[in-house]
Amino acid sequence: MSADVKSYAAIDLGASSGRVMVGRVGHDALELTEAHRFPNRPVRVPEGLRWDVLALYAGVLDGLRATGQVDSVGIDSWAVDYGLLDADGALLGNPVHYRDARTEGVAEKVWASVPAAELYAATGLQYAPFNTLYQLAAARSSAQFAHAGRLLLIPDLLTYWLTGEQGTELTNASTTQLIDPRTRAWSYDVAERLGIDLGLFAPLRQPGDPAGVLRAEVLEETGLTGPVPVTAVGSHDTASAVAAVPATGERFAYICTGTWSLAGLELDAPVLTEESRAANFTNELGLDGTVRYLRNIMGLWLLQECVRAWGEPDLGLLLREAAGVPTLRSVVDAGDEAFLAPGRMPERIAEACRASGQPVPRTRAEITRCILDSLALAHRRAVEDAQRLADHPVDVVYIVGGGTRNALLCQLTADACGLPVVAGATEAAALGNVLVQARTHGLVGDLAGMRRLLTRTQPLTRYAPRGDTARWREAQARLATR
Image (tube, rainbow, N blue to C red; front, side):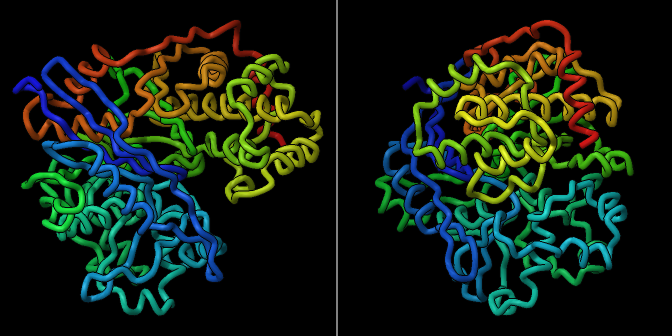
């Protein structure tokens, strides 16, 4: 390997699978290969839905064993969830899954102390029932919480097990609803009013900060030769994915697709208006002082659950059949909390269409097309609303993440938005993870420099909008009145 090319391990944990990728980066080179992939299967136990975090950590170690020698390691994962440690640093039970029912009705109790409008003005975070703030309110009376000496978000927990050092990475901390997006620091007023001890959190880290070195036991188990530094990256996977949007200017929107669709803009400052709160947009923190102004959409979770219910049929064939179903025959609200929980997804989608007086999708192809049309419509609404609320017009939409493999969804999004769509960076979170590590060695510069390297080295596909957007506008209006 050339002396000016270095190797980085990107541990990228999603809600349904984890992967350890190896990125090789030089001043004009960026290659990403998969070293190991493993399932992430939540487990339902008598007390509720839990993450099998020990299996995840075992997958991480297996992945590092498969990478070969690397110059640094970084970890990103989904947001909001956490593990509690006792005074000795031992984990107090498996972390609770964000889809667990324990936060039902909790938000209203929180708002009794800090009204929703005040909470948004202070933290800029959208309402979602699983936000860390509501999880903490639900957990406060539990025996585990009473014995907790430290709270670590999921990537910080795994970093602690790898290095023995504790920290709280900022981009993920910004999803807790306890960060002030203007100061990029803890919101002590909110925490105090809700009785939350911010001392539970380890000190904040910025993307690019050192996060320790692999412990001797980890080196022995993985076969790596130390010292191997661990670097804090944008540990919220969406922060890493947005860093890997191959944009060439500022007038762009992005959609990070996967289990969720995260659709919005990259801004220099948060939007904290009451109108923004009513539209349920969130202000999460990104690299280099940026704000990820976006809306959460249920995403390909809807299709994933249907495919699981159908016994894992051939997805390529399913999408080809769906392409032959008429556009906008039936649509559902892809942001509806009714679709949050797992199970019976095909039936629930059909029931939603029946309840709204639309043709009921009956075949697998019709249900698949309903999902994809609904996602494209939700993408349109999010991109339109973000431009209006932030007064930030865009000329192009970038799609990154697993949804880039779904050409039908990309084309439907272009049609719905009436804007060109550029799809690329399928493993966007891993690429963003790797590039932050590479910055620590001076191989790339600022965020714009990272994106220039992406556009030179990664395959991109462009989708032009077909026809006008009148039908999509009409469908959007119909959905809004139901």
